[in-house]
Image (cartoon, rainbow, N blue to C red; front, top):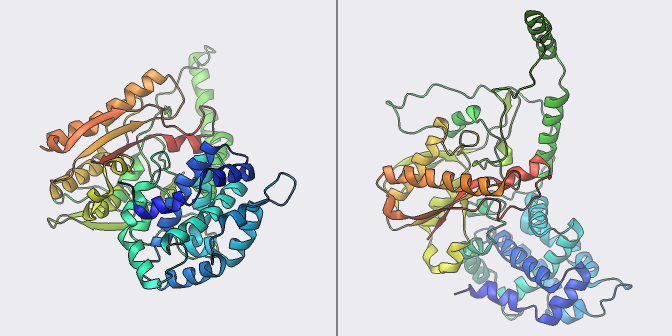
Length: 459
């Protein structure tokens, strides 16, 4: 059964209102409804991060000034192509009060860009849709303005946080919102400070006989394929800059390569280069890893992700990344997740963030085994939980091959769990290929990399 807060917010928009919003955004009705299905749970998630702090009262106080009567028809009235649109009036009203900024803090740009990318909206349209959605959100929370009790609303938001997360569309995922479970993802805006990158040696010897806990930061150096997750504009720029540097080069290594080539030509007495593919070339058509952009490795430097220790009910401690799959999954399993209903569970997926395979195969790299071991430990600690495994690719290459490879990689995870005597908790593995890929085959690598991953869904 659909969560009543979410249902109340969606029901706020009748067919006429949806059509008028479509005029503002230049979208058809289905496009508007898809947009509302993304923005409404996103806003509820944003508000829920303030539910256990004093922040919710300040936000509600601002909202109360703008949504006294919840007159949506008044907000949408008189929409024409020539006149000032209702969306523009909405943006001026709510943004002047800083409601969206108060809700998402320093994560506002990330939320807007992520949701806009998923929907295919431009930045202006997603801002307008968010502001339209605000009226529905506060109408549902306050029973159309009849009850603005801050304490009650805070409690309701906290109580329904899991349902809000489950309502985020499957294609959008929890990448931009999942860390709201720990309340640390969206922080107040801070002034950006640029510091020179410092090379960090992160590969260390690990004696598996001495300890079963492996620090995931030690695994990233050996990744053979690109890592991915929804990225901010800054990190995409970093990819582009790094790609440019890799392509155009410069420095001592160019001289070294030139000398090697000359020596080879001399050795072959003019036989030339064959032009064959180098052994070390990496096929990036499919990748089963998803990692937050803050961990992106560039050259010999690594911006380290925040690490955490995930403690399971049976006392086992897992070394993981904050907001990573272990962190999110355990918090989800500790909640009353079964109450959100079967349909919502099917639409809730958790992406592996440190799982890589050999190029073009389903063989999991040794340094990625740590995440498989962690998943096995989690399932053993939650014997009532069942999961389904899904594999995904981008749109490059042959679709039949992509679907086959995505299935093989999902099955590889399933087989590992079977060896750990957990087969009964795995209801299936499926390869979706590029079925749910958001980006075209000729899109930049920084976009396509987000479509390649292996995920699990709790059932």
